[in-house]
Amino acid sequence: MGAGGDAGHHAVVTSTSPTDRSWGVSSSEVLTLVEGYLEDAATRTHERLGDVAGVAITTAVAGGDPLTVGSSTALAAEVDQVQYAIGVGPCLHALREGRETYVPDLARDPRWSPYGVEAAGLGVHTSLSVPVLDGRAQVVGVVKVYAGAVDGLDEEQRRHGRELALEVAGGVGLASTLVSTSLELDDRIEAMDTRRTIDLATGLIMGRLGCGPEAAFDLLRRESQNANLKLTDVAANLLARPAVPADGHGADGADGVDPELPRSVAQAPFRRRGEAPARGR
Image 1 (cartoon, rainbow, N blue to C red):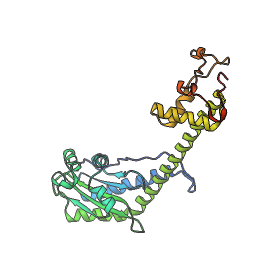
Image 2 (cartoon, one colour):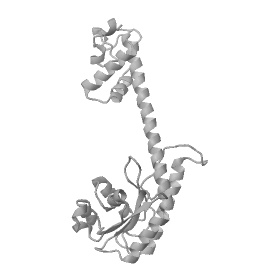
Image 3 (spheres, one colour):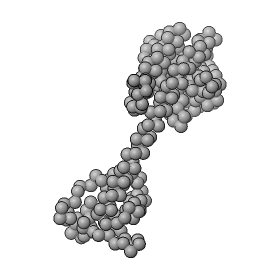
Image 4 (tube, rainbow, N blue to C red):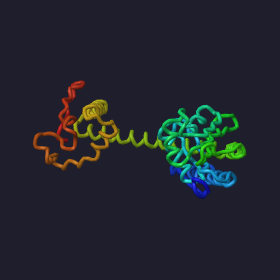
């Protein structure tokens, strides 16, 4: 079956983030079903096209990276990943500009360097990228057809590619929405975890040094700057330190420095609003 081998299922993206269950199943489960449908559509089109290297479908996520949500061969998925990594190529161009792009000789077309040369090195010399539009004429994805020969797609094969773009518009739009929802939920969960870690570390400093929340947070922030680490990393490192013994003395406690705190934090002079740290608590 040409350069890409036999057409088959090659999933690239699988979301595991749960969202609401308004349909009785999670968004990740719906996305899995949508991806299966898109892979089937890509495989059926590959079979109709005959001797091609593969068919792949990309979806666009607002504020995120392009994702391959269905491909008929592993080669098609691999060529997609090369293009995403480089950030230049006919698929990304079609995604941004909303225009069909046919490239008969990827290796010799200077517009797509260095992607074109790398794709040719993998065995793909021709590509067709057709934008997928939703009901509002917004680009939600791209259908790609790859061929192993130079100028390897005739007009009939390109027509099949355009038909696939029309066929899968609803599925690609749904996949884009589900992936976007999952990414948004992941961001919110990460933000909540980050806030909780910082709050716990701030509370620990307050308890150990007998200071207020503003002063404790300021110490945490200064430690972040001094150590050239993210605030959340400093907070996590602080929380991961061994607990101080009940008598307040540890291996480093002889000099009066709380061993649970970073030295720059434990030794910081508190003169804010007349407060002084109550060490050894």
